[in-house]
Image (cartoon, rainbow, N blue to C red; front, side, top):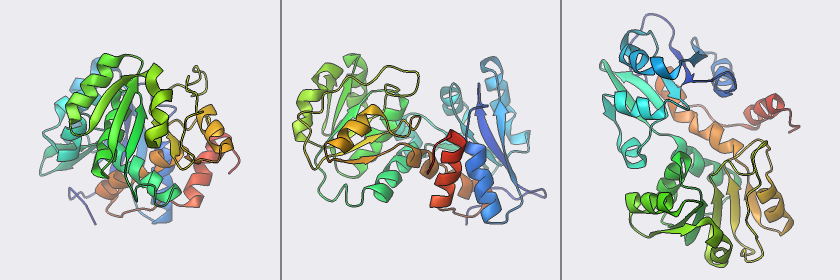
Length: 285
């Protein structure tokens, strides 16, 4: 059990962002509070960009036990934290805050959530780690590359702007390499895992331009996008017979460490929780 600060009132946590009305984090944490019969609350906390620095400076006096941080405030949270753990520093971004000994602590749980989703939905995916292809080089890609390297994968990063892919490869070193997104199809024949970390394929966005003809039949394909639940990339891979993993599980699993920090109980991702979020998305489970 992790309880970082003793308080006379029930723990309060929330998600900080702008806008934040779309966040499904309150549904996730609210579900766990009910399941575990815990006193406490989790709320949406809209903070305009011009107010975020002052908000974070005042965090110790806010009455909050901690918070998730979403766009566009992750860089501000990284700068404001008194202490950032090794994972947050390695990834170079944070999404989870908590108070400890009067100091604002921070970490990044996206990489943990990414790995847990694959562990849950594609058993044995990392039994024989080889080459993984990561599409995109933004903040989510950082967490994914970090996670894959923890499991022993060599990582190829393909991005529309090669310079960003190269910067990410340089950040992590090891067996990483940068490529143009136009090279992705050529790389598929050697890849055990393909991960889309871009917004391409999301509802309202362009489709991901990737021909899967060279994809290995035993490769796993996953997409961090979860609206739609099955992107065109996943649908094509599934039609070819490849194992696929949607992005909803990453959202659910990344929430686990924060809840444990703030409320003192480690929750689990269950079919009931997944069904709750699917219903909110308007998707039949």
